[in-house]
Image 1 (tube, helix red, strand yellow):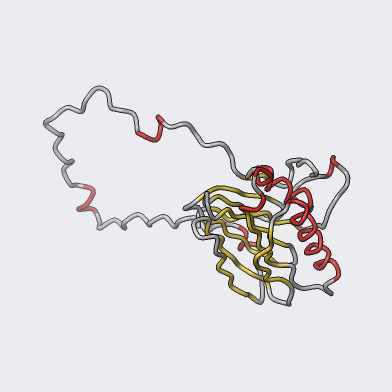
Image 2 (cartoon, helix red, strand yellow):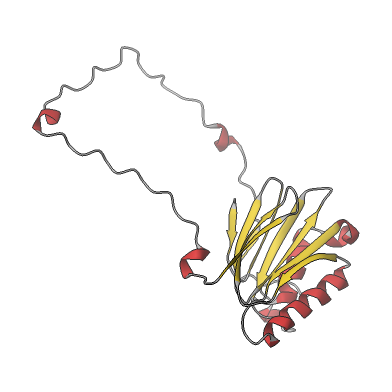
Length: 208
């Protein structure tokens, strides 16, 4: 997995990127184009807003329209497909509203919904593969705050000292060949940094 999407955010990219998410009562909407292998994901917690000042990825209509605009879905809406995942727990009223908003916005965009895994009492962990358009879903009974952050790699502990004898070792002889005065810059430094492909909760999005 290349990126773990936090709640109230959108993310888009192309194959071979994979986007993950952890979903409880919020809803995830994915968009994918089978020809270009481009796609993205929006995760939102509230159904909709008509106030442009509040239009961030927290709201379903703003999040889906924002994701669709980033992917230029309106250029050829029939080439895109959507999937809905999440909206678990609660009495169902609020969650059904999230789903209803997603269906309505996608219908206005002209994007077909090809799969829905929604409702129920269990949370979901998922990975969206932009190379295949497939979503792997794992149902879980509990979600932890730490689930929203990718684990940092563990550093290897320094080797323990072997006693005074180790401190008395002679230093390694210096290299007979002098290092070159200048080195070629790393290949990565020659490449331009890609533009951000994520939109967080604080970013305003256009409605429609």
